[in-house]
Length: 290
Image (cartoon, rainbow, N blue to C red):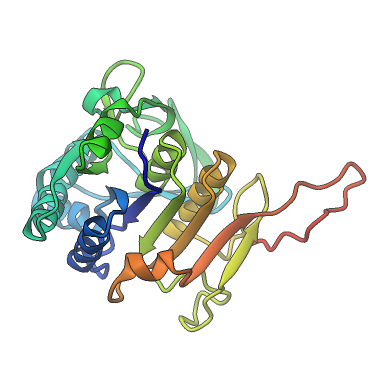
């Protein structure tokens, strides 16, 4: 087992996120004895590379308002190239620059992240709900944590990204926030920090100063329509991690100095799951739908 508390950090792919600053902060914490696993996305790099390769990008909006990337075969190639070929090497090199041994992995390595590919997904197109097929994305079904555990015990910082591997042993795109939540659960992490290009969860999406210090989300169902896109997925990931036994989940600003240390100290938004409704329909605790 890992002797010191484990923190899983998700570095968002928004170009505004200071990935170098996150790595420098992680390095300082590792040198102080912290055990950290880093998960990353790469939406900015995926978009840049897709533009260079002339691969159209499309977003699917589910009936509940949650948006995800449409991953056709060409886009899947772009995702793998962008994450494993560009973003991950930069993060590993940045950690090495601070004398931290890091190892880059995808969810496919060692069968670490197993996912079920979605045969079809529902999306709203021109006001109508349609089924979209040929989407190479999936939902994580199982996590085999032996590989990252071995690296953590040996003093390495694993740096993990999609894709995962599906039931037919093929690569499949998965949401990086939910991958971080699944890994945090499987590894028995104490904390999950989702670092993003926003100051946290906002009470008013149009007011960047309206950061909630904490939010309570319902134990099931989609987030409120006021939380859309990437923030909706982060809230879903936070709920999954908390349900899996992770003690603390925070959504924090990845653009600030020392973002990991700030989040560990309680900055930005701490996520909680509200009590489930009682049999009479009342709730023991009011759920703030975010």
